[in-house]
Image 1 (cartoon, rainbow, N blue to C red):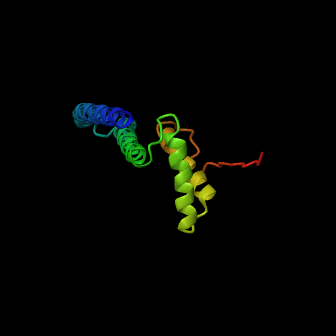
Image 2: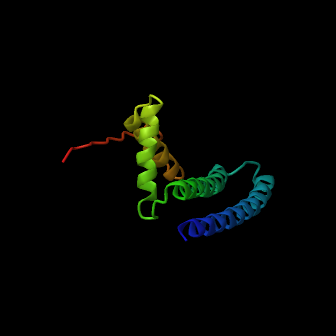
Image 3: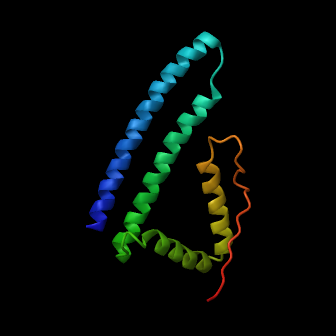
Length: 135
C-alpha cells in the first residue's frame, strides 16, 4: 500500500508539473507581450517561473527515489526519508566521502533553492552546523 500511495503521489506531482509548465507557458506569453511593449524582460517573472518548475521537478524526483528505496527495504512512510539519509551515510563512507560535509553542503543547496525567490538569501554557502552528541 505504501508503494501504491507513493506511485499515486508521483502521478499527482507529475500532474502538478504539467500544470506548472502550462502556467509557465501562459506567463511566458504574457511576459513576451509585456516585453514587446516595454522593450525588456521581467527578471522577477522569469526567476519565479523557473523556480516553480524546478521545485516541482525536484519534489517529483525525490518522491521517486524514496518510492524505490521503500520498495527495496520496506521502510514505512514515517521513517523513509530518515532511513534513506542514514543509508546514504553508509554509502558515502563506503565511497570515501565525508558524510556530514555532504549533508551540510546539501542543506546549503536546499536552503538556496528554498529561498531562491528571496532577495536576502544566503546562497549555497550558508553556514550550516551539525552537532552529533552521543547519549
